[in-house]
Length: 90
Figure 1 (cartoon, helix red, strand yellow):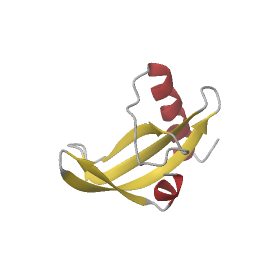
Figure 2: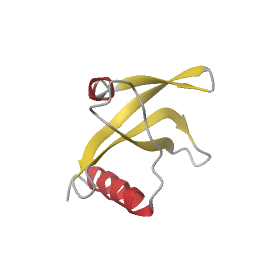
Figure 3: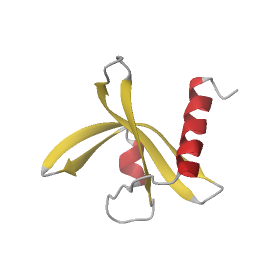
Figure 4: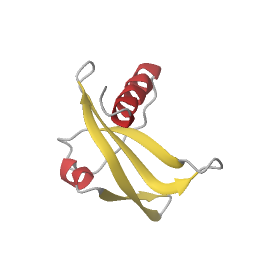
């Protein structure tokens, strides 16, 4: 799975339809031991911002499974990592 995400493009089958996504970044949250991927389908919202999505995944999983991020602390960490990326890691 890690290899597919690091290639930069991957395909998910949603509701019987395949859709291509582009990986923005992957990271390990050392606080909870989970791996995350932030990705986009390169569509834009009504304010012309690119839509981003985030999921957790198990890099040791032999299949390709992404899991919903449900907890606020996980979303806070994802936002922190994205903000650091945008600001150049300051």
